Each structure stands twice: as structure tokens, then as C-alpha cells.
Picture 1 (spheres, rainbow, N blue to C red):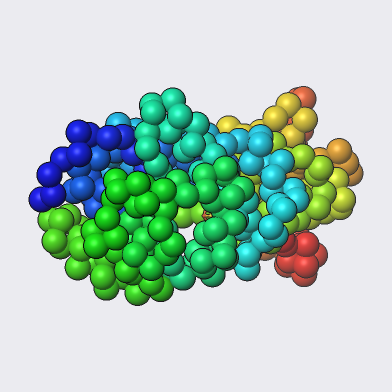
Picture 2: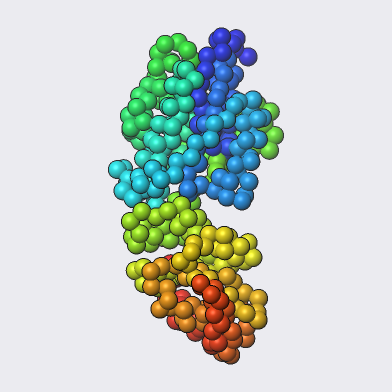
Amino acid sequence: MIEKQEQKKVVALLSGGLDSTLAVKTIQKQGFEVSAVAIKTPFCDFDCGRGCGFEIRERAENLGVDLKTVYLGDEYIEMLKNPKHGYGSGMNPCIDCRAMMFEAGKKHMEEIGAEFIISGEVLGQRPMSQFAPALKKIEKLSGLEGKIVRPLSAALLPATDPEKNGLIKRKDLGMIRGRSRKEQLRMAKDFGIEDPPNAGGGCLLTDPAFSLRANDLFKHIETPTTNDIDLLKIGRHFRLDENTKLIVGRNENENEMIKALALPNDILLEAKEHVGPIVMLRGQTGDKYIEFSASVTLRYSDAPKNKIGVVTVHKNEDVEVAIKSAEESSYTKLRI
Ligand code: SF4
């Protein structure tokens, strides 16, 4: 263990994944006091019911670092409408996204008087944001030129300010490049990390199916709300017209979430006598589609096909509609 350097402070962007965990360990080993920042956006799986928010707190606790969580909400949605550096293979604006994350880290750095900021980025690991020119660009965009240290790959990258000032030494920094996790797993073993975590909190914007739905949303609504985005994470989505969508729950959990996300103008439908989905009709022209939506609702329920069934429509008042279940061909073409 290298002797402690009077506990100078460093901020870490912590995702909860193995790479950022190892970055923290590497810098702690060199005697720095690390303070972590976890960034949440409307598109991460963090706290989405899979317990990532809990996991990240647990990870910070195990690392012995304090944790600040920053939520990038409206400003993130605004950026996503037109990211200056474009999208990756999905709707992921990785360069602008990372720049925003580092900016948030920079604020924390200034607040606590930290020397520099670290992240678990690995050179060449991710196509859009982790190649050398992108790393450089992110530093510039976030106003952190020379201040970002990527401990896992830093010995392959240009010297940063802390290296030039002698705070850190190249020989203590990693030379990991590419997508293989072999070296990270070896390091995890050396650090005694049992059960090493996978990649950090998943980003829905890299998911092709989610990206299609997000793209459709941004095409039809100038500034979507976090409620619109939360709805994208669940159910089957159908575009009925420019202004109207139908969302069909796929299980009990999603049915509950659809109910919880329903706003006063949304129309909810459910089969009256059969087990089935909660269906939401959202948009300015919803009324026009009540019969069609009722037939789709019945189709996705346990009701026998091609028979008349009753669907309850929850609007201002509850109304019952007797209808035949929809033909598959009438709605599959509308699926987003
Ligand atoms: S994968 Fe998602 S969270 Fe990660 S940098 Fe790209 S847009 Fe941001």
C-alpha cells in the first residue's frame, strides 16, 4: 500500500458497476479520500424497481465513500431533443450525456474542494463515448480539461493535471483497453471484491426497442414529461394517430404502474369479466378510439376470441362497452 498523501479529496462518478468500483479502489489505494456522485437520468434503470439505487448505495458503503445522487431530469430531456454530438446506435446521446454527468461531478468537486475527478471509463470499451477523441471532447465540454482521470486506462492516455503535478503516478495507473473484462476481473480478485458487479446501471437509450418508442415520443411531443418517459418503460405501445397512443399492460405489475401514471385526461380500460390488461388511451383524440381500444383490451384478456365481451371504460364516469375482440391485423401494424 502506497503511503497516504494527507487525504486529498477526489470525486468519483459511480455507476455501481465493476469499472467505477475498481477506479475508486485504485485511487483509494493511492491515499485519496473519495467522494462519489451517482447520476440518475429519466432513462436509467437505477431505482426502476430492480434495486439499482439500493445497489449503488450499498456499493458506496462497501467502498467507504460518501454518496451524492444527482438527478438530471428536464435538462436531460431538453438535451435529448437535439444532442450536439448526435446519437449512438440507439437514441443514446453518449457524448453530451457524459459531459452533463461530468459537469454535475465538477460542481461537487468545487463544493468539497476536490483535486480531480475519476470515472471507470475504459479506453475503447464503448463505441461512442470511450474512444480517445470522445474522451477529450467530453473533458472540454464539461470544462474539466486535464482534471478527469480514468484510472483503469490512464497510463494509455495523455497525462492529466494531477499526474503533471505529481499527485498521481503513471506507474500506479491502469492500461486497460477494449471490451474484455478479463483484467477487471483479475483486479477485482486482487482487491478482494467478492461477486464482482456487472456493468453499471443499464441505460434504456441503448436498448433498440426502447429507442424506437422514445424516438416516436420525441417526434410527436415537443417536450415529453418524465411521466411520458416512465410510461415508455412499460407495456406494449401502439400509435393510433399523431396525437394519440394506446398502452397495454403486460402483467399485473405493469397494470398497476399504468394506473399510477394515469393523468386526469387519460382513459383507462379493462375487461369486465375476464382477467386481462389495464389499457391506457392517452392523447387529444382519445374519445375517437374508445371502441377500437375496447376491442384491443378484450383481445389481450382471457375472454374467448370472436365473442362479444364487456369492457369497462374509466373516464370521468365509468362506461361499459359490449364489443367483439379485435382482429390481430387491426392493431399489430400500429405497434411501436
Ligand atoms: S449509455 Fe446512456 S447513460 Fe451511458 S453515456 Fe450513453 S446515454 Fe449516457
